Image (cartoon, rainbow, N blue to C red; front, side, top):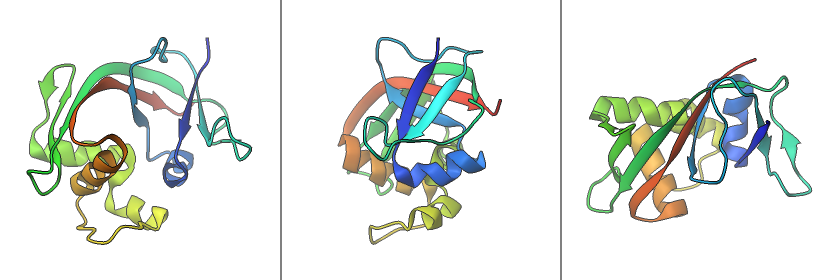
Length: 147
């Protein structure tokens, strides 16, 4: 079975370049499973839909993720747990870079908000607060490798 994921335009250059090899998603009926190909799109279900990579990458892992955000700390990401294991601060920074929020990514996106601080964790926190609000997010981390 083929599973497709849609991404915001700001992530497209990183997916095409192969520097973003993961995505965090809410639970749904069926996610990719290790060994299965995944189709990666920008703007799925719109007239501007385009496939980002061909051939389709292969899912390498699907793991549980919990992300807690709060306005009470400067970088807004309070904790990240993957399969119940909490990430240390340096690991959260590395995770945020891998998820597309690193310094190089910001230039690619033509980052629109003011106050960017150069921290991938802060960029990710800002994105999560804007798109999901404060609180706890439970979902799935899907990882892939090029075909």
